[in-house]
Image (cartoon, rainbow, N blue to C red):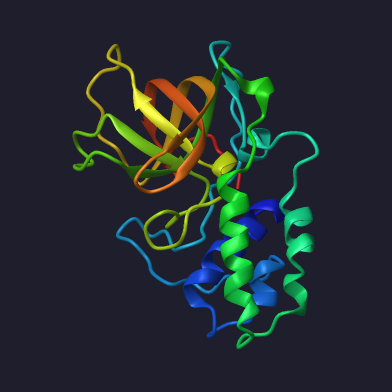
Length: 214
């Protein structure tokens, strides 16, 4: 897991398990204790390995760090909240988490990505019910976000709409999506997002069968 995602994961899982594990360790990007697992084998906090594919020409492969605007960093936010000074039973810890949530919901997008045709891999969180029939979902960088753990910063959540031109889509827990991304802020029932993406293709993410680097 890269350092930025480790910090994201640690901080959101922290709000679920505060009191059981050190908030200082988790907020600083320490190890995450798995809270649940799925039939897919993924555990909360798991991320996908980076893509390693030949350029398709139609879409630009991007990672989750690409969604962060220049100069914006989770490290600066953590420093401003002074989480390192808080202990497990400090009442200020929950106040700091509330401020963290407010700041993450206002997290800015990377304007350079607006209207770009991109491909990105992540975990699927359906918004409209049945996974087999959904045409709208969230894509997030780590397993469990928005369901078993709080939502990531808004600039680490993509509100995905499957285009009418796309064939019938059966979603898997992890997927590679390709389409046009736009800087559009929305407040869904599960998370605030800084991006909207109309996708032309949704492909299952299968580590054993796809050219992704470990």
